[in-house]
Length: 125
Image (cartoon, rainbow, N blue to C red; front, side, top):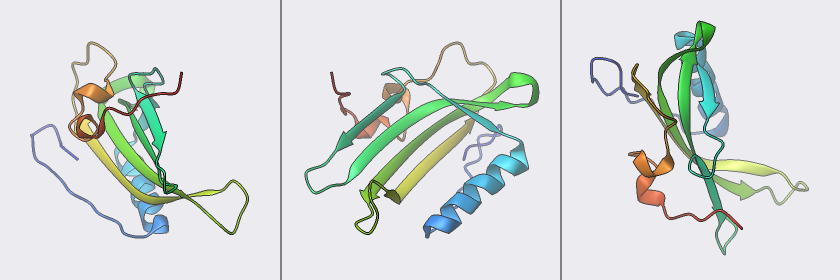
């Protein structure tokens, strides 16, 4: 995370439950709402030959009354659970939250520090 002072704050979690708990705790502590950019420039995914699915997403962060307070980028690496039908597990995820008040346009994956290196992921036509 990057706070308004430019300070980088790193928080890590290892297990799936710990990741979910950490994200929920950060969301609750800062009263954040995530609003993804659902256009083709804000969400992309691909399936790798060995079964790993990579999903990239970015968007804006809001607090009460819809006030925009920043941006987020997140990557998900998903694997199919072989024991259940059509169920997926998060193998790995990275998220970057950036405090920013003057946002003129929706963020795009090509602008993101976290997501840009993983492009080009093409959306299916």
